[in-house]
Length: 259
Ligand code: ADP
Image (tube, rainbow, N blue to C red; front, side, top):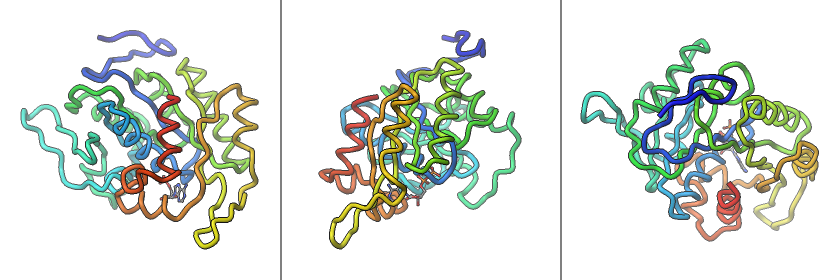
């Protein structure tokens, strides 16, 4: 079905997909893709049929993070069949153009690429589709937030003031187009020393909680800066699957439960 959604923009439902959750950030490099991958795997582990759409088409990182490569097939010559990793369906521009190809696209082309990856892909029956959004709060993101029928969004930030400021912009962007914000995740929240296990608040502590309160939203979780998270996500085996019993995995599962 289709309808007139947020801000009067035309929204077209994605057949077979029950809920679409956007994972967004005000700026790049804060761990949005890492969180999106682990969140998708957490949903899957909780028994929900899950997919992940890598809409970060300027820097697609889901093929690497989910540890899946190759080219999607199109059995009917019309729709692409998504790739699959750890039971999660994965679609990314990275499968179609290669990770090293620079994307120098203008806004409207970005829109149509993402629309195609949403609708011209045979997602099958999904309970949840996680969308790894392009970083930032520009026109492209705003239009996407309007055109995709989103159940809600999760905003990733680091504890630094500058990132929190951008997170606030992200929150306002979603509110402007009437997309619910489930809450914020503070990533790289503190540092865990791999040798002694001591916790250091290198980016100053408590910012996420404070800002979430100020903005009237939830702090869904605090994920530490930990080499295990980096190695596993960059190595294609995110912690939720490679260290299923770890505190990190539990933190992502708890975030998924609140969404
Ligand atoms: P974004 O999608 O916001 O650009 P990424 O998820 O690609 O950010 O993360 C950027 C880099 O930081 C990646 O190398 C990733 O493995 C690493 N990273 C993300 N979160 C953490 C964390 N909590 N601890 C350690 N490294 C992390």
